[in-house]
Amino acid sequence: MFLKSFASSSSSFTRTTLRSARVFQRCYSAAVSDNMRNQFLVVVHDQTDAGAFDRRLAVRPVHLIGAKKLKESGTLQFGGPILTDHSESGKMRGSALIVRAESEEAVKKIIEG
Image (cartoon, rainbow, N blue to C red; front, side, top):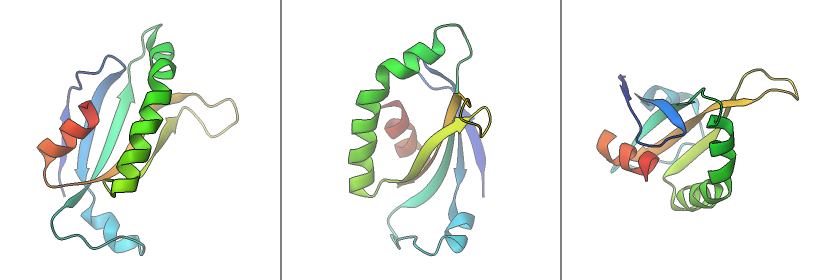
């Protein structure tokens, strides 16, 4: 297992973390066997400036269309927001994803794409 961070070129995110998700595959019985691609756990932290949340909401409709296409292709295994807390008032502060890709570089292209 490895953990790496890279700076995203997107203006809505501060840092993206990739982690090999192979250890999670053993715990996830519905995991699809695909010898050509690896699973990566991706954690994306939102920026914290005054306009960050508005930028996130502005791109959300297009983001969800792209996420649906990635899900249908089998590239996106799981994805969702990271919240400040688990109450109804919890605000989005990032995202967590499990992505299938050939390499770390391929994951970066997907995330920045």
